[in-house]
Each structure stands twice: as structure tokens, then as C-alpha cells.
Image (cartoon, rainbow, N blue to C red):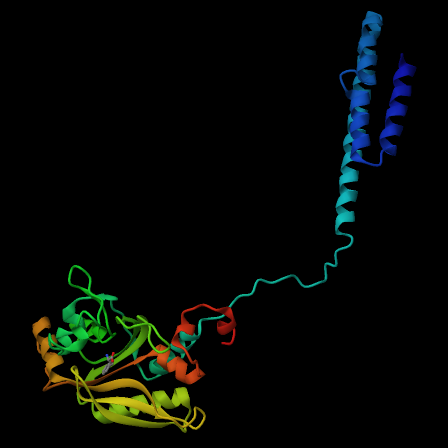
Length: 335
Ligand code: PHE
């Protein structure tokens, strides 16, 4: 009996050691340890072993089963490891990986950052207001009479409750003065909405940057100095700037700003509106606040506003405003 066990152990271990793949190993597992396997068969011989020999024989059989199981597990692990290293042996681990492209900021965002940085250097803080506005903040407080064309339903998006999508960011001037006493020096970047037919120069939603400076003795010279500095920062120190008289209900006097540079073809480009805050705006604020901190006899101010898309188009010679919203990577990758 003992010899039989020893012989079986030798045979099994040799076969397992020689196995070259997992299928052969699995076959050996069944042949030796399976229900009708050799180790199982020999265990059935227990019945014929004399009682006093049974413990010793039982231990022998146990050792055999364990040794075969161990050998099978070890071989299987070695085969798996070999398969793993074979799979990576042809890989060059020193090659650089494939990186996902991190992308870039949208050209408008890049320009916005530049503009904001420039005004921050001059001490302007950033202010914000809602895109959905009341008529009062968007028009009435800005001295815009009820029959002004901008208030027409053909030009402005009205909501059923009477509010509207702000047609300019000038409403933020009002929000800021309602809530903060002078001195005020803010810029307000954000979306504006108009019922324009979309074409190469118009979108129904675009981006504006508003500016407001209110304090004692703010003059037209401050307005000119601030905006000349800004446009020369953006377009270069040789830029020509002209303030052309214009009309806005909320500023008096009012101007449009045209600029001209050699590099951009020496043509005048109309880029912004501006002016000295109209006393009627200050009076509307005083009435709303219930105090006189914005008394037009005591404070003065200037305001300006321009469209970011128009600025980007002129700076980067973008021929069609729609390119800024189409998300075509061939366009965006150029910035
Ligand atoms: N709100 C004006 C517009 O949208 C621009 C502007 C702002 C003009 C501030 C003067 C002062 O056209």
C-alpha cells in the first residue's frame, strides 16, 4: 500500500512538472483529484486496510492529496506569470504615453481675461447682475423713455411676466448704485440679448463689458484717459483713438469710440459707447435708495460699454461672428 502511494505521488508530481499549459494541468487535476481520479481510487482501498494501520494510511493519503494539490497550484501560478511576462515583453515601457489633449480657453474667454486684467490694474472691481432683468433696471432707471425703440418688442426679448432678457449690461450700473454708496469703480462682463437676425455681424446673445466710475469730481478727462489707456494696451501704443459725439439716454455727453491702427489696415473701427453719467440716472437712484449719496450736485461719473465679440473680431481679424459660437475645432485651435 505504501509503495502504491509513493508511486502515485512520483507519477503525479512528474506529470504536473512537465505540464506546459493550463489545459494539461486541468486534465491532471481531474485525473488525480477528480471524483474517479487515482488518488480517490486509492483512498477507497482504505476499506481493506487492517484497523490498526488505518490512521497511518489515512495520513499518507492526506499528505499525497495535499502534495498534489500544492504542485498543481504552484504550476498554475508559474504558468500565469510566464504568460504575463510574455504579454509585456514586446512593450517598450520607455515610450511616452498617449496624452489626452488638455484643450485651450475659448478665444472670447482669453480676451475677456485680458480685458479684465487691464481694468483691474486701474482699480476696477468686477460686478455682476442677473441676465433676466426688470424693465426698471434695464430701461427706466437708465433714463430710457417708454417709447424708445430699444424697448420695442421687436428688439428685446420679453418674458410673459413683464421681465426681459437684458439688452445691455448697463443694468448692472443700476444694480451696483442701488446697493453701494460712492465711490464706485466697477466693470461688469456678461451676456446681453437682442432680437437680431443672426448674420455675420449679429448674434441674438452676445457678450458685453460695462464700466462705471462714480466719485466726486470725475471728469471727461478721466473717461478719456481710462479708455485711451485701455485701447492702447489692447491694440498697441501707436493706436489712434477718436471720441465721436453720439447719443445714449443714460449719458450726457455721449460718445462712440473709434480706433485705428496701422497693423489692422488703418480703417476706423467703431468699438464702444461711453459718456458721463446723466444726472437723471443719479436722480432715479436717489429716489430708489431714499438717500442723496448719489446727488448729481455732489458726485459725477462716467460709463462705457462694448461688445467682446466685436472686439475679438477686430483684434484677431475674425470675418464672421458665428465662428465664435460654432465650436469648430479648426477655428478654435488657432487660438
Ligand atoms: N449700453 C450701451 C449699448 O449697449 C453702451 C454704453 C454703455 C454706452 C455705457 C454708454 C455708456 O450700446
